[in-house]
Structure formats: C-alpha cells, structure tokens
Image (cartoon, rainbow, N blue to C red; front, side):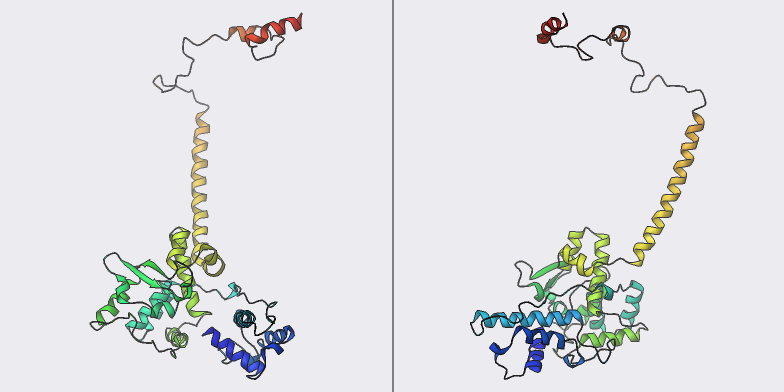
Length: 347
C-alpha cells in the first residue's frame, strides 16, 4: 500500500515518460518540497487545512520508499547514482499527537459499536494492542488457546525479521468476552476470526471515526496507533518492560520512542504517594519525639539481652595501653624480624 502511494506521487510529479537517468538530486529535492503542498495530498482529512500537504512523517515515508526504488535501479545498473540518496527518509516520532484513551471512554465506544465483530476489532486494538488491520485480519480460530488463555498473533509488519513473524499474548480479561461472543456467533468450520470487513477497500479508520462520534467523543489523532500506544503504556506500568514489549511485538527502545506515555493516572499516583509519604514522615517525627523525651528518664537495661554490654572476663587487659607511653616505633607493634633493626637505629 505504501509503495503504491509513493509510485502514484512519483508518476504525478515526474510524469510517466520521464527517463530515470534524467532525474537529478535537485529534482528529488523539488519532489520533497512538492510533498508539502496540497497538490500532493490525494485526500484531505478533517484535521488538515486546504493548503496543507502531507504530514511530515508521511512525506518522509514517501521519500524513503522513493530512495528504495531508485537504489534498486542503481543495483540493476539502470542509473549511475541515486538522486534521493541525500534526502532523509527515516520516520520520526511526533509525540505531540499522542493520545491516551481511558477505559471509561473505551466502554462508551464499545457500546456504540454496531456488532460483535466491531466490538472485537476495537477490543483487540485497545486491550490487545494489535496492529490494525493486518494483525486483526490475520487471526484464525486455531490461534486461540482457550485452555491456556493465550492468543497467537501473526505480524506481517515484522515477519521479515527472524523469529518476529508471530507472538503470543494473553487473552486479557477485557478481551475475552468479546472474543467469546464472536466465537458463539461463528458458523461451524469458520477459519478466520474476523469474517467481515475483510475487503481491501474497507476503510476502518473512517468506520471508527463514525463510531467514536456516535459515542459522543471527538476522534483523536492516529486513531488505531494511539489505541495500541494506550495498551502499551498500561502494560508497561503493570508488568516488567521486557514482558510488556514482548506482548506488544516491539522492543523497549521502540516502545519508549513511539508508544509509552505519561498519563493522568501517573500524576494522580505521584500526588497520592506524596501525601502518604507526608503522613509517614509525620508519624516518624512523632515517634522520634517520643524517643527523645524518654532519654531524660532513667534507662534500665535488661540482663538477658543477646549481646553483653561488657567485655568477657577473659578479654586482654588494656591497662598497659592506657598508662604506658608510645614507643619510638609508632602505634603498631613491630614484627620480630624488625625488632633488632629498630633497636640499632634508636641506639
């Protein structure tokens, strides 16, 4: 899908009959600037203005794909150099568009979903942390282990990395009732968990926007990604970081850069913790005052304490050290082999 978007933009800007060797680094830079204009945007979302082009990360993604296309042409010796080589194609993290969906609002959206499969789609995103739509549509009933309470998730996005083609997550309590309801409604022999909305032309983002508005809420930026980020944040606060990252199918570095958020609950817990610490300090101070007041009273020591308060009777006497003078060899006693040498030096 991303490659086709980039192909469409390249053909629109350069033209279908433009020879590849004629495209220079300057032309590539012009293409990058053109992506920032409204002409490069095929559709305009409600949160963009008429004169705005592609979002910064979207434009970088298109540049990265174009760089990949032209590098393949270099490898095939169709062109001598890659005109996009010096342009930045790495997608950055725009934390200004982060959004944490509370459980209260999530329940409102679940109530507004039109059917059981949409409730499951939403629950898999919000409480399972799945990537939508690829991981949702890849679920099979053979991936559901009801006995162990586990769900195998297939990840096309990370399948090209060794051992990253699938992962296993718990069937979380928030997820189970929606999964069970779809199972009860499934016809015998059904292969896919999600049987509806499998058409490639189905725009789940548009559908979810309508559901969110029906619930009386305002659609947030990056609808599905922020649902995944919300779950990643919750899991990281409840489980060790490596466990939360493994269930989400990414590394802790990626989670820290793109997913983990500071929530209102974090601030609330911090404020409550401060109050508790204040109460503890007050109690500790009161206890210390009681101990200080007791110091003026006569102290009575028990005779059956574990460690005696006086040295044992067979301890070596220290009278010589207290009354005698310090010798010329210093505080530490001399070794036998040095005794005669020290005597000769003193004489």
